[in-house]
Image (cartoon, rainbow, N blue to C red; front, side, top):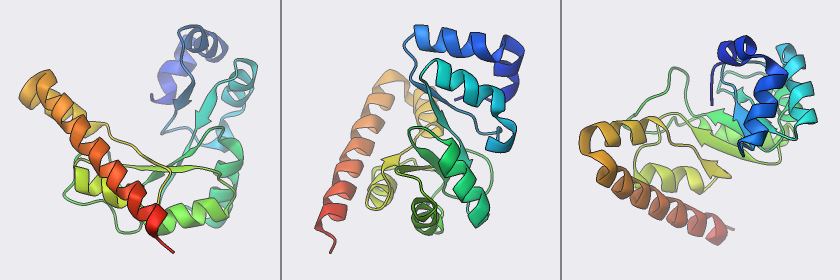
Length: 171
């Protein structure tokens, strides 16, 4: 995951080639919209990389369709409006956003922005295809070091398992 400016500065095709040769499978570009991604779409095709764009609770039906069509791999659904970071709860509009994004053609939709506990991961995993966690790992590392990261990863994985079980049990 990176903002677009460093990729553009590095050179889009060179970045894609180097990412692929380093074993990368794709790129999340939170500030790049599909309408302005022509160079990245071409480079990711050439180097067989997934491209992940974001949708938000405010995304229009047209934006959902264009984003779903441009993504390869999955769509990143931002659970709430705002910046990344740990939150006390995941946005309550995330489930609806996942449903609308799937209806717009996305085969897989993962949810992020604010997931930081096992219970939050369970909630998201009950309706989404994946749970995205970033800031909580950074916070755990800063507050408790590698052991805290390991503990958080275990807690989140348990939450995802519980959410998947709930999803499979749902009618």
